[in-house]
Image (tube, rainbow, N blue to C red; front, side):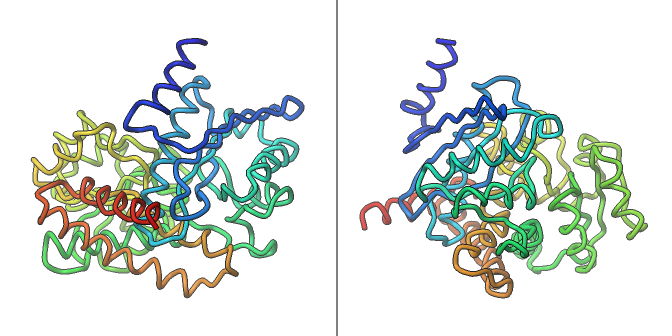
Length: 360
């Protein structure tokens, strides 16, 4: 246990991935709740980020994920122009086995204990109905159902924002902000991916998909038989003539194994933390592959849930999510002028905004 604790503390206090303001370990034995809430920054406002419910191999892995995701939310919220810092929570365990009303209420009380420093929402393993339960214990829960004063499923605007980022990528690479006639591979067609497919088809793209869940694939092919299905992500990234690769499942999609064989000229998807480790962005650039930073293009969902705190207005949110197109172009321009990959350019812009807020 000492090694685990030392590793977590080293990450928190000494590594470049640390610097978090606060990390809360939560336990409620009666319900079986074990959770981690990590607040990376409140420079721009209360930390905002979803709650992930996942069967981590161990507690150290859960803490590491919370720290990484919270840091990412600081950058995402800064680039989205929100008056929010970055935070994230993870609940440890298989949601199919241990999720219960009692557990979610206990978690809601821990969110309440932070007094508004953390605003939560949905993430992997949590849904609108879960947020309705969590919200019964605090007023800092978003992603609720319309019946309970919320905006509902944030996947709609997440997909819309990714599509705007993809349009900006097309503008940069091919000189035209459309995917018409382009072959786009979408890995993961669940919550967000299936909405993204709809945007792509409407824009005239040729779409190739894969997903580990057969029902997710069938939902699309039953409606759009022209969509091509491949066995897995390994096959998708090797598809001949692929123009755009959209990772829309879990993180780490871009790594030492996938980047060398990727056939696409653009990577733009909804998944968080797509770069498996520092240096992958340079590998992409060296291969002439344009990478649209994930936390920039997938910010539509957080734009939506943040708006709930002010009385949700879908048109207002969609207008703000449309600006992801301009933000993505700004990042590509900064990358070119600074001579760095787009991921580094995005980080610089976000860090500048947070630093200015701290000074202010």
